[in-house]
Length: 103
Image 1 (cartoon, rainbow, N blue to C red):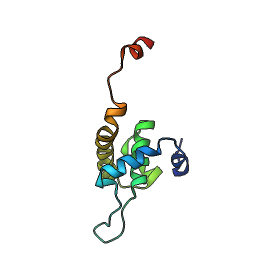
Image 2 (image 1 turned 135 degrees about the horizontal axis):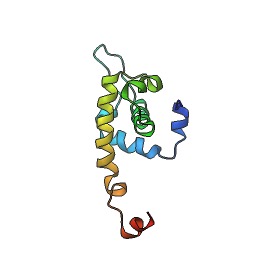
Image 3 (image 1 turned 120 degrees about the vertical axis):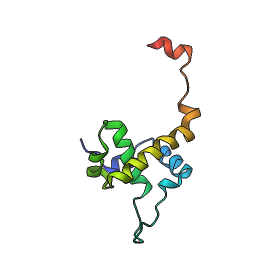
Image 4 (image 1 turned 90 degrees about the horizontal axis):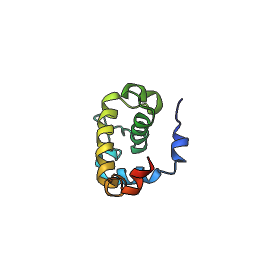
């Protein structure tokens, strides 16, 4: 199943994109060695979400966002670190007693 960029933009979690992009310069679009603008943050983040959501290899992300494997690996590592730094206190907490009793 192939995800589209349009589907991602309608995702209610777009605030993750904004938070991660503001936290880490890796997700700012910059020129490459020949002066052309590189991948935009949204493509890197869509690729990272695709890896997590579909449990796929980095190689297969090229079909979705057209980013080189090495760029996607670097972006994925930065994505994970940025999510923990930005949203860790809000979402990455130990479960409370009530939550553990549910399961």
